[in-house]
Length: 58
Image 1 (tube, helix red, strand yellow):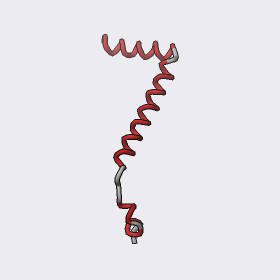
Image 2 (cartoon, helix red, strand yellow):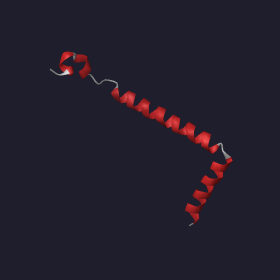
Image 3 (cartoon, rainbow, N blue to C red):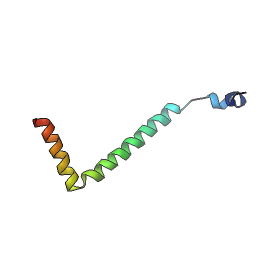
Image 4 (tube, rainbow, N blue to C red):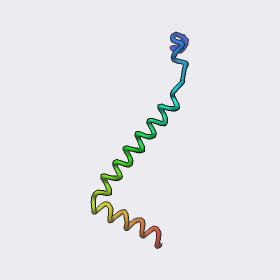
């Protein structure tokens, strides 16, 4: 016997898309927070600008 056949409410996936969107939003916020912390460092910021400038010019 399968677990789903024991409890019919486990078959209902209502709201699963909402949970997925919420997880993506939390991950995006965490990534943005990480970028803010990293770009707060002058060394990281200058190195990043060097990489971007090098990519655009050459």
